[in-house]
Amino acid sequence: MPTEPALPEGRPATEVLAELRALREADAPTRGGRTFAYVYDAGLDGLDELAAEAYTTFATVNGLDPTVFPSVARLENDVVGSVAALLGAPGAQGTFTSGGTESILLAVKTARDHARSERGITAPQLLLPSTAHAAFHKAAAYLGLEPVVVPVDPVTFRADAAAMAAALTDRTALVVASAPSYAHGVIDPVAEIAAAAAARGVLCHVDACIGGWILPYLRRAGRAVEPFDLSVPGVTSLSVDLHKYGYADKGASVALHRDAALRRHQYFAHAGWPGYPVVNPTVQGTKSGGLLAQAWAVLRYVGEEGYTALAGRVGEASDRLLAGLRSVDGVRVLGDPAAGLVAFTVAGEDGVTPDLSLLLHLADEMRELGWYLQPQLSFDGLPPNLHLTLTPATVGQVGSLLDDLAVALDKARALEPVVVDPELASFAAGLDPETLGPDEVAGVLAFAGLGEGAGLPRRAAPVLVLLDALPGPLKERLLAEFIGSVFRI
Image (cartoon, rainbow, N blue to C red; front, side, top):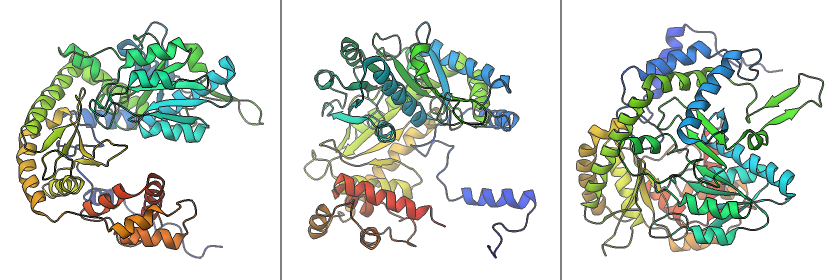
């Protein structure tokens, strides 16, 4: 029997809330336009308060059973109906989910079960461009599909439609395209990929988690946007996150299918137990109606004209940022960004070759100045880069960002390069991540400055340069061990 209580004595609400607010002080700011990843800020007065009030109104509603809580069905039909009207085709059907990862997982499940029942495929493959989101690899690992990865064009960073078509096999259950890809913000050639899939009777999913809610409004704001949604022949499903450019709170997403027959493969139903009959459209069973309600409220608060105006502001911020970056010596924007995402790399002394150490020093220096730019490491010949997510709140920050970037880049160039000991790199290359023991893992993490009790490093460059040099499987093992050390009581 435990001798120590699991919890302290109850405390007044004011004290509990004060402690929560104090914990937030160490976090990156989620409003104000200085955190260029993870958060989406519409910059609209009253929006956060509306979302919070809507969530509170439905927080205790259980979304598991719409026959008991019919408001859930009404809210979901309204939200999914809006998404289908913006992105769909006649007869399109969808489901509200907790986020892009769940929407993607459900699309992959739908394709796997469709391939099994309609085509007799028992060892399905998932065909991906190398820039497809990691959530597809997670879905493949969870659901037992074999991922087949096709390199993207090294200049445009778009999926290679001809190579994707050539990689189709009789085992392909689903082909994926991005609109846009997260890493570089470019739109894949959706029409060509979907046509090749349709010619082989294969389903095609478009990951529009980022772009699904902004690309149509950018088009309405007068910008050219190539077709990418269910209006494109051969596209059979699509995912769109409302907690991104829909500006709802996390998590809010929709998985949209061309018709109800396809969506049926997404569902899980079970009557083979003594409890209540179970039917789950999503991975979750019990879930609060609060997230659905706040998404519904935000969509109706902002409205058609509001989203068009917000998309125009993102486009304006993107134009000014891209022009500013391209004017900086040694900076190269990657690809042709289409929807608020920008990735750029920085050349070393030769003025051409990306310099990882310099790039990561730049990220650290920008963080010292109060900006968060997301580092992305090199992959399969694609250069390391810094990733920025633009929102309406960043419009007024672009000039300050570019000014500070010039200062930070000068400071970064004056710092000693971070290098990996060749002997360590050689040693690491020979390690088998599957057989590493806890002491060996702890040793490598300690060398990287991530040992137990070390806390999070103030500067990320030394850690990320080492990670970039490690083989992929070892990198994944160490990342998992590090996060495990963070979430340890």
